[in-house]
Image (cartoon, rainbow, N blue to C red; front, side, top):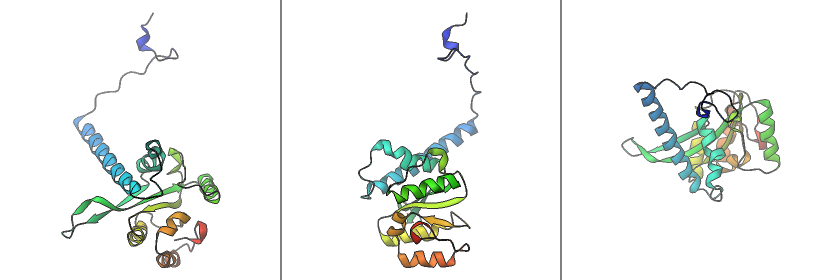
Amino acid sequence: MEPSLFKNGDGQRLPPPAPPLSDEQKRQIAAFREHVYGSLGRVVLAMAATPRYRHHSLADLQSLALEPLLAGRVAIAMATEKDGEPTAAAAGVAIWASVSEEVDAKIREQIKTGVFPLRLKAQEWASGDKHWLLDVIAPTQKLASLVVANFRQVVKGGELRIHPMAARMVDKDMLERMAAASASGGRGEGGRGA
């Protein structure tokens, strides 16, 4: 009879241990971990300075910041010093998703019922090719507008739908210019497409 430490809770044999990591793999993991920690810190600081996020708990950070960050759906615009070096603080943050038809319908339903911030499952953030700008977090409307204007470099081509809350954070004329310049000519939720 095998000792129980070689079996998991349901009596199944445990898989063999993973081979040891190479020094290069360890370096890559450490660099990724540092990137995630730094980016998460910047996003949390931006959220903490924004009234619409201040009432959320630490537990909410999983779905509000960490899951979109791990899915590559957070764009952080960094301010620069006069010498061109980036500062430690983010100038603005864009939270976005590329979703399937099903998740697109879920987002539209949440908008109709007034849900903000939207709640997506981890696997939904990058589930398709329908692009949504779900929020822009910046200290001023001017910076928020710059973040959105530069966001088009992140999501190239196709229709970009903008959550009504994000649309209220930026200059309306800039949104109209983006909509007019859009190759698809699509309109986002709330009449704001880009």
